[in-house]
Image (cartoon, rainbow, N blue to C red):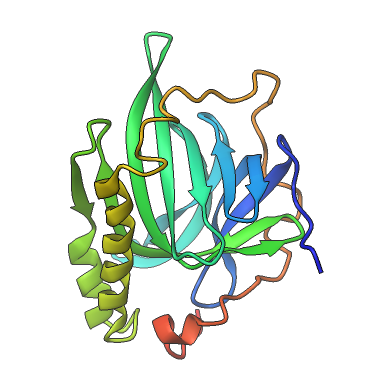
Length: 222
């Protein structure tokens, strides 16, 4: 059975699903391309996203977190590959009215799952920040190690995350797409308005990653 495809310009919601199986950080996006080997989503500068913010008690100690509206700060093209546990982002910033390519970002994450309103995934902490000249640095290595030590991830999962990032870096070393520079001048359709989170985006039950226990074990209740 052929899976239904989105069309260019369709509005979707990209949701991160927490270890407690609920929607968390989320982004409205427009579909750029949807094919067997690639789902490309555009998140424009100014799109209102849902991001976590810590909540502290009267003594200033963190007690919980809540989702708040945060405007996205850069045009971002997010390339997601069916079955792969990473995505590659390209971003552009505005400099005095001129659109300037800001670089790439390798994000390690759950393989995405389609939902009636978009896609579900979850972040796996470790990232790679890549400059336009393709020089790169690790991001959040210490945080990954801390989460593995504290039981957020099962003990060996950090090694798997690192191996995933290194596999994505092989694409960069070969200068294969998208690190061949072919998308640096990409621009979105001028007729696309800034997308908004679809009503009820947080009410649709999560589509869970089948392999989630290999990463999170038996996740504790919220």
